[in-house]
Amino acid sequence: MKALRTAGLVRDDTARAGAASTITLTHEGHRTLREAMETVGTVDELLFGADADPVRRRVGEAVREAFTTER
Image (cartoon, rainbow, N blue to C red; front, side, top):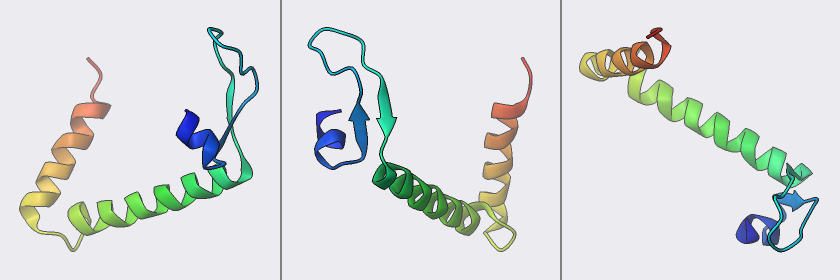
């Protein structure tokens, strides 16, 4: 948390030693998170999307199914 706070990505609204913290994203934190999500989406599409190798697409489908199938 200290590194995220130092980078200006989060704010600790209850910063007291030994106490549970309420952490919120700063404007910069929200922007960085959006950029990261876009990058992950691009990589996901390259690895597992319609133009990806068929084996990789099957792996991606299996992973999605593993996390969406009710147990």
